[in-house]
Amino acid sequence: MFRVIKPSYGRQVIYILLLFTLPVLGLPVQVEQNDSVLVKYGDKTLLEAEALESADLEALKKWLAAPPKQVDVRAEGTSLLGLPVKLVISNSVAQRWKSEPKGLATLFAQRLNKLLSNTTPEWDQSGKVVPLGESRVVSLSPYRLEDQIQVTSDNPEVVEVKEVGEGKFQLRGLTAGRASLSVSSTRSEAIPSLPVSVQPWAARWGEGPRKFTFWGELKESRIRESLARWLSARTVVGAKVDLEEVETKDGRAFKARATAEGALSVENTFPLEVQSQAGAPLEPARTVFLSNHPERLVSDGILFERTAPATPVRFMWHHRNEPGSADRSLVLQLSNPTGVTRRMRMLWYSYGPSPDEIHVGHTAALDYAAAAVRGWGEEIVLPAQGTRTIEIRSVKGGQTASGMAYLADLAGSVGPIGVKVLASSGGGPLPVEPAAERDPGRTASGVFSADIKLDASHLLGGPFTYLEFGGEPYEKDLDKGYPSYGNFGTVYRARLMLKNPLQEEKEAVVGFASGGGAARGVLALDGEIYNLPMGTSGEGLPVRKYLLAPGEVRQVDVELFPQAGSNYPVRIVVKSDYARLEKTDIEPLRPLRSAIP
Image 1 (cartoon, rainbow, N blue to C red):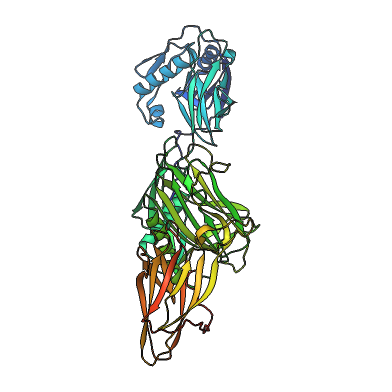
Image 2 (cartoon, one colour; image 1 turned 135 degrees about the horizontal axis):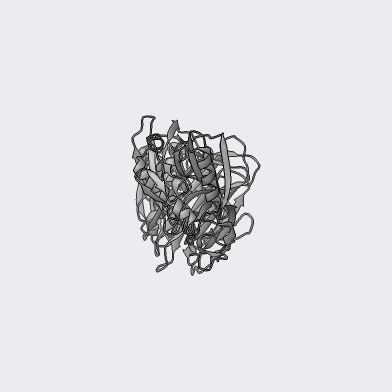
């Protein structure tokens, strides 16, 4: 909830009987009288006193039009002396100012002396901070036309200056940085300059996300992760966000505070409505976005920028900041090149930074697969012909950030969708040039086929059956033909046929084995997710056993995708007690029922 706090400028009184405008030293001074006399400077009231007789009012007007060079207005009790007439501060005047007569007389004397004396103009503040892209007003006083004051910026690319009259100047922040406002005039003494700093807001959260819509079990962790991601996407790069839930009479509300070096802190409290609906199956992805080259971040720049022709799509990213480098942030964006606003159903699992690249890649893959088989998701909106930052995640030197996402149109229509990944150290606009490349090994980026389909058979009593995932042949980029080394992010979908030709019940064991080094995996067997430990070579680690009756033929749907951070290829090993039977191909019983979208 937001409160708009409007400044109060005291009482407002309309005077209509008498109005005199006096060119005091070129100043817009006015004298107004109805039931009291007012002396105003521009839009500011300098003083109010008891009403004067006509002759005294005329004398005051003439004196203000041409005051003496030496002015000494002083307060004595409730009166102002040193003017051609005595001005009295009555109790009724003091009540309107919410003060007392003697104190007001002293204040009014100080104001007149400052206005009428020939003092050097001063800025109304010692320095000014202007939000980037916004305008603020500063003023010099006392301001005299004959001084012919001109104010200029020593760095016009940072701050633009425009005179708006009566000693006021509008400053517009163009670029983050510092500038100084220099003042020239016909006065003999120098008028001090004004330092100005232009800074972005640490965040632009507006009225908050207002509402989240989820599919599947509504856990508190899901709400907080989505909110933290939403907040991060609307901060300057490198900002720190603190989040806490607050009590409110109208439901849930959160207070968030964003801070960043060189930025203006932001603190907002906003309500959040949360809706949930039952989990629902997700359509298999058509294509996969893979952002893994360059894997090492050695400079700021664009790491990945591609468009796929249609949803649903899968998206995997995995990048490691160079050891010894300053903190960088991954900026992940989605774009909608169509002319209509699109509601999307999304899975988004992002982890890191961590020095353990296998761990973050595996955690993203596991949570993605587990959420998918439960039919989870959340709703986002992509503006027509617009780009939306989904997340900004800081990555320390020597650490890795990794993630997986899924996107599908909710309206039933499908259209192109773009993905962009950038590395930024902050302190300015997002980079527009490609990042430097310095990867010694084989990594890939591109748009690839979302799945690889294959069939395999194991005759119980026959030799081992091996299913390899992540080896050659490698998928090719759909537009550019680049190979996807390891086929990371592409789901292998295999119909594994098991047959027991013997006259007794037999067991088949499905295991997981590494093939190219340290690797973990996420395996789906008939839609059930298995969190695979670090693989071993050879026969591998057993995952699941299948008991087949004599003569039974069974189909097992196997799904696995090479996950970021691990070394692929890996193998699924199917074995049974060897009875010297020959390997044979077994006809699949049905189409594969996919679980991982």
